[in-house]
Image (cartoon, rainbow, N blue to C red; front, side, top):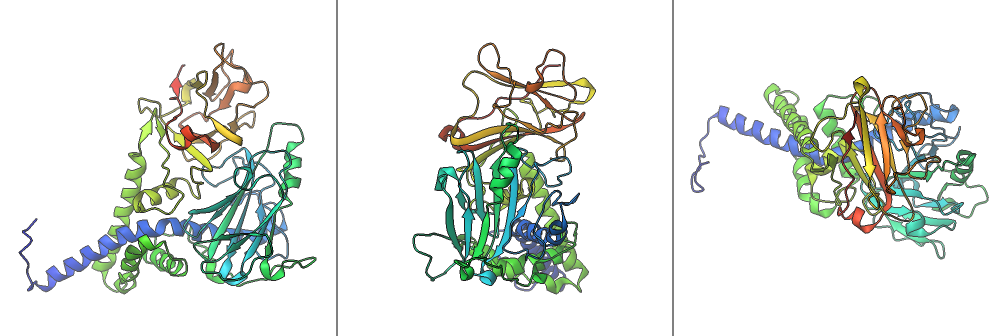
Length: 469
């Protein structure tokens, strides 16, 4: 480092070029990190639109929307796409929950206008959620027992700066961006026939434009979707394409004011002007590579307790942690904030050894008396098994997750609860206590919905997974 009073205003052309390469490389690094959450939204919306027509014709057999169904002849934006089955190994979305039926919707509030989100009455005080997220995967609001009760409800979702009038008595949710998405989760219990019961309940979800509210049979306006479709985005390696799409999305959906200075800096970086200059283009590519290494390093060094990644209360909400937020969206897309749900994941034991169920290895996750996570009214917790790629894996009993309310679950002699994790059921272990693992590396996800305060604040953490055989 040179002293503050030293400068050189007579650099040669080569030094000026190197300085410009350094500028672009730095801005490409922080630009990639800044845009990454929004680009996950863009990718999800594109996949949603591309999958809609196929889903409307019948359940999709594979792809990112495997199992989803839509309605033929209904426009994709402003409509619910529903998963009428629980997730399975056919589900290609990473880290899926296996406890609830899912639904999703994408809405462009500036094109469709304010939307009324209608939720049917809770059938028996069980957990459900409609999470409203902005265009950067930040949570705006939640609908569910904890927040809105169990009665049927209608809420009006509006774009930033909306000054209109809501129907009498209707709650208004002001979103921070005109592009939003909704995620619905409805818990399926282990009772016979409950899946059909929840399907009927889920079918009561409605989205209605305010401009058509009150009509006997409101019809959704079709809006252009071509600008939102990017068929090659899932696999693109083109940095300039990433920035072109990401910056356009950012311009349409500005970040919170606190991040505006960085957004402005990245927006005026001039990445497109590097197309004809190999050295400058390489600098942009190097900056993106730096960013991806930073994301990998963030996930690798994420704080852990007993092998479990420690949840961060800032994530899922607007915050200044650009690198950490980008890493989190890379690992788990569209996560709830901790007031709604706390997610803990592990792929190691307390000593940092990778969980590996090959060769007949057997692991246990044991909660001593009173050590299980506490939840509030209508809340629950569950444990889900994934392979090293964060996907569900086939097993002989089609069990991908388990909960403490599973029929036949046997408690320990001291009142605690032990789950056995292995590729085959060990002798002497009750089947209800077994969560099948792949015969190789595996990852566990512990989800706590409506967490009690000690869980939401991080005062509680899961016990370490231990190898017992």
